[in-house]
Image 1 (cartoon, rainbow, N blue to C red):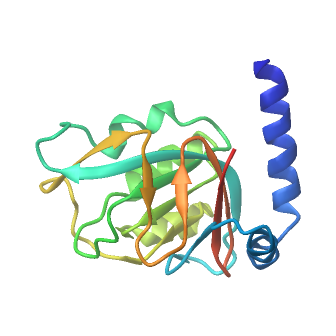
Image 2 (cartoon, rainbow, N blue to C red; image 1 turned 90 degrees about the horizontal axis):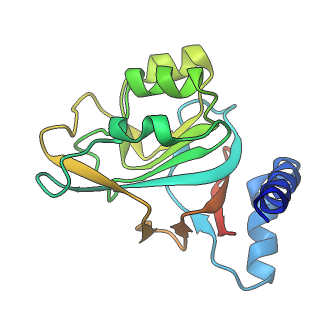
Length: 178
């Protein structure tokens, strides 16, 4: 039943919050489970988050006509926005407007295989963002996006699948399918 699944997910998230990602990574390794994303760093070293992954994948311009902003109202409180931008370093998909909305809506944080912008707003609000870097150039002229995907993050041993759980701290990002 849906309530039991939600309770189970909440219990798992609480247990994950008690672990750092190094311990979680070691446990996954012992079980033979690939679950680590490499190269994504927090904007602030104190950022940590755990939550169900809400996944968005960036596409070449003209394929969907949508942006991350088209989906932000679908993200539930406590979820982690996970954006696959193919590791791009030349165009951002997340900035201060999305950070402000996500913080207001109590979204747990954002993980980007790519870059973000407007770092100051994230730091000011204490809203956790993990990305490969940051830049000022928006992706709005070059990219669309779609929801609910399965994607390997380049340079990692991770597959993030909706709906999965993401556990993120300074050390690493670990992901696991439910």
